[in-house]
View 1 (cartoon, one colour):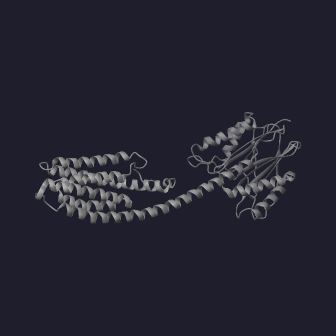
View 2: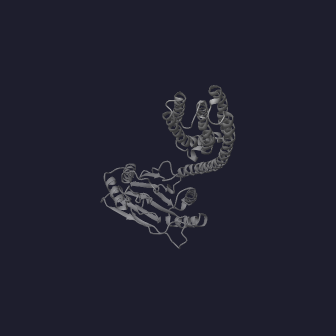
View 3: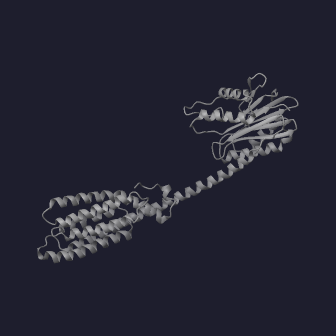
Length: 451
């Protein structure tokens, strides 16, 4: 029976936890004691084959039965009935058998002086259990001592039953009281540890509930469905690595032929990143009428994060302005990975890379817009850094080159935006294999179609 872990005991009541803890303690130590009892009984049986054979064989049988009962209890989660009950029955019967032996009074005296105190100091019995054991043994010694005196008459060797009874009472009773005191001290320590463990468990539960609430809020920030303007296909996915991730994407239709895709990543994870993320999202919606100038929007959001966010907590953000009428895409990046373009006419991959720092920086910065053509058949890909930095079991990153190659292969087959998204996610999953994601995985695919 293994020792129960404190976290397991913390889920039980005080009484159940105490019982299981001390039962496990007594089982592991008591089993060794009964092995010694069996050896002692076998030795006594072999040493006196001519005298007292039946009683010594019975003593051996009692010990074997007790050992079998202990072994059977090993399969249970905790001992039932208690280990103390096995102890009381076995000691009482064994005391009766030893006392009844005509030449066993010295052995019984040693038993009462040494063995019982040793057991009480070794095991963890509560005062009531220890008192029951002592009373059972003393009652057995008294009854069998009287019977032995009647059987053996004046020829009995060794101390009288009264001497044995008194000696066992004082020494065994004192050891039982001392052992019960040790058990009481251990019980106080155990209950104190359980109180701390339950406090820690409640704190973990509270934090988990907070994270789940923050996770629900974060998911509510992401758009349920992409807009369908008729000239642009959109598909996205976000897989947080923890309960509360830092990745974000959104869409803003600012005119019938103008649409903005936002994608960002807050440094770190947890509740703090969720707070910053909610602030930036609210800022984007407040600035939705100014998103036709992405650099200006980034400047204002930079001040927002710097002045209201936690110290040294940064956020990357990219704004892509699709203009179907002008046939252009404007990309403004605050630390986001490069935007990849698959050219439908040539099948080539090009990148718009922004090198300016993320939002929240205290460095002087002025964001700018990079432009590229937007033609039918073009496929644009925007990702968080968790995609190219996804690691396999060997620690190799997925990489921007592999990402560009997978985009070219998927877009070259004429797949729609959702199919391209699924193909890219599958490629990242194959690369990772069994490795756990240590960063959020977010991507947005936009495919220009004929109006």
